[in-house]
Amino acid sequence: MEEEGQQYDEIDLMEHLGVVWRHKWLTAMIMAVGVVGTAIVSLIMTPVYESKAVIVPAGVLSKDQGAATGFLAMQFGFAPPVTPASVEIVNLLKSNMLRERLIRKHDLLPLFFTKETMRGKTENQLMWDGIRYLGNRTTVNFAQKDNLITLSCRYKDPGKASELVSSMLAELNDYMSGEAKRVADTNRKYLEAQIDKTSDPFIKAKLYTLIAQHIETSTMAEAKENFTFRVLDPPRVPDRRISPKRATMVVIAFVVSLFIGIFAAFGKEYVEKVRRKTEESGR
Image 1 (cartoon, rainbow, N blue to C red):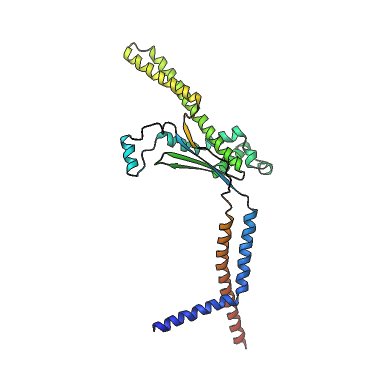
Image 2 (tube, one colour):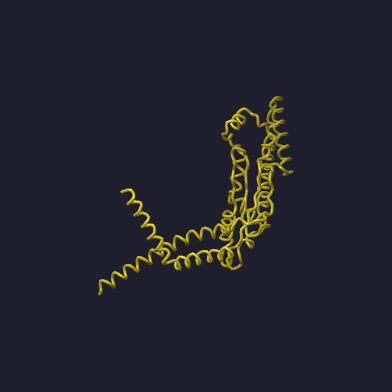
């Protein structure tokens, strides 16, 4: 019984192969159309390049990594607590506010869209289109364990892709530095006003210490350099495209068209059998 079953499987397989062989030209034509068509489309598609930058919140590298909780977390392989600065930077890089500031400052709408696509739209509509366009082409990844933030941008021009990443980091630094300076100056003025309201020398000493700290923060924020984050790996002009991946597309097209060709061969065989049976019954 076992030998009969094996013989039946072999015969069945040979019949299937025979069907494919009888309709080999149909299968070959479908494969040729699929592969050649995919190759042509991949050549027509606009190449896309990606530029990346890796940053770390300011102060992270200078802090002692041997602090009890952080050290144990790193030793046992789980992520240390997220610092507020990291969360703030990631959220700002993903925010519409920062993208809008970048678009307005560098007048990016003509770079993103043609005059025909911009015609007839209001300023608000164009800005939203620009924000969505930039958002779809930028990616922000946060490695919590290492406290590293990766910003990447994809664009058809490799030089522009690198410029967009650099401009976004510069805008982020300007915004965070400006906010830090504004908050420090506001707090300093408030503390200075409190000095005249107290006669306690101990409280005055504490107030002077806090004022000095805010002055230092304001001065550092005004300098801007490495105040909010440090660039560990600056953006470079990419030399290779990330898409289209022509070889991968052609291989996938070959496999898919092969299966389609086989199904078409069996479909044609089935139609021919039905036609023959109809003709025989008609006689």
